Image (cartoon, rainbow, N blue to C red; front, side):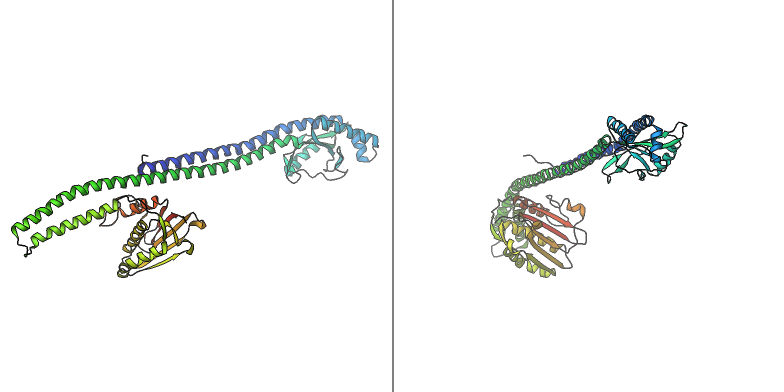
Length: 452
């Protein structure tokens, strides 16, 4: 499997961010369009329904005898006449799919309700301030339609058309009203409810789609980064082995030549600094070559059941002279149930030594190191091990390159330590995170699979 360079990975992260932003923008625009269309649809329905209701109200008013209204108001209408009037209004009501037809006087009091839901003299209370003004116009002989309003505790929408009832002289003696059935307005409510449901579903789906996409991309990037680091270190190991061989051959020739020259020109019992520094420098070079090779060697893991507390105690004991010289104290806390689990003891020892040594070097004036081991986020899939130091911290721009081979901020060293730490933890199936601010200390969190 071929790897992808960090530069390409960073570019792909930007591309993913652009795609996510695009998806969110489309969802947002679509929802905004739907909600902007709703008031337009409501306004259109309001106008068209208003025209229809006024037309029905006017035609119905023309069919109602003014004399009957006068008799009702005077209380002299007989039951048969009242029954026939109600029957006629009920037929008109059913033919036009209305909610109700009623007649009120100019003071907003009921004269007649075709459905008998309201008593004569009861106050009509469904007019708002704007409609009240129009009602005065109806009292003067003009037809009008109310605004859409909610009734039945806001669960249903209503709209009413009004037309004046005139006597033979043309004087307005009452006002006839027709209520639109909620069935006509239900489509608007259904459309609004559908918009709400669609908005919620689209937001939820969008949210989870983005979460899934981010998780997949994160997994892909993490895998590619791990492969890239592994391939880079493997290539480095092969290159180092070849270079070490090429360097050791001349060193061996130099050492052999040195021994020949010494035997020829200097008796065995006589020391000469001119000659003696040669084998010392050869040993030095060999030592550096061995150290470099040990850092680049990709040793296989030997996973066994190990005791984390015992390992840390061993490391702290070995490094205590260094900590005493640097006036650095160390504290550790390990949850008892995770004292023992499976990991490569030798390689994890190298990791902890590296992190503790770096922490000591970051505290030239002394300080404290804290090591904590616990179940990660309350679960038992991973063990988290925090190694924290109160040192100078790491600059944000350096944190991004911290685990890259050959990156170092030190005057001496190869810059391989943290990349090897990264590789070993990846091989364990774990993860390492860094949290640091300049002059506020640093915390490395190692996540290892919990295996018992």
